[in-house]
Image 1 (spheres, rainbow, N blue to C red):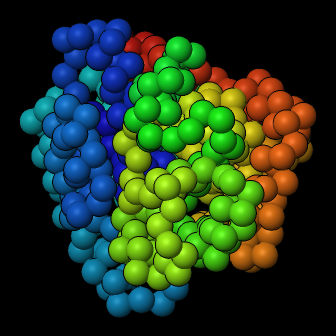
Image 2: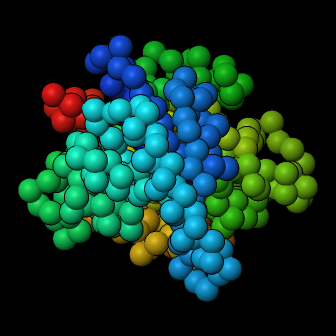
Length: 360
């Protein structure tokens, strides 16, 4: 059983682990457990796996009426998790963080079932910290995580990414044809995470004329929440160099032809950037627990593997920084080389091996 979700940063690593397990053992049975109404309830079936939803949500950090329902939802989720474990009888239960992983992993440990959690960020999530003392193995993406977890349980694996992210050096022509863009022009790829990023979108929207003046091509993932709004607010005429989407499924093509990538600093996004070896500008989201995206980004900044623009300064600095990097090929090469050296392309396989060892 594999549990977790809420955002792409949890959902896609979970799917990647499942895919690696299927590759290693084609007859393995996998059941996902997610949170009702969250993106995993759509993305997991699209990837070919069965999923069951729990009626659960996160505990709000500010005073909220939603917290009044939390104890009831938690109790019901614990009961359903117990029932699912009894019916599915898993050999191992894997948690990747997010609302649903807490109840399921807790019930698995009570039933003495081997458990593994995977922490994507450099600052551990609340659910994983809570579970860490009782689980069997903890797979992490960053060094120094013993300040959050028991050292003897930690395995440094990196973050698993979608297998379709891996690029083929021969697909450049195919990628340009897919987006109908010009191979002779510089291409900027903007991705604000699976849900979108308000400050990033607003900065790009206000800077479109500067991008067109520099004859830059733009592939822009706005996130589903912002797509319609941006379409209605676009002041400049639609340009033939613009490709705008709410979500880009064919990310391997987007990474292939991007000269520079603008991205949030979520753990999954950074892992994909490492494997794509692209020079990147990170805008950490300020709206995350413990400011963990800034901590993620600083790991790359210290290794001269990316540039960073603070969220509060995105409106004035983002497009200017992007155009500067697009015009500096030496800096692009340095950033691309350094970020590639930090990647762990076999993360999903290495985590799957640990899962299989626990099942033995």
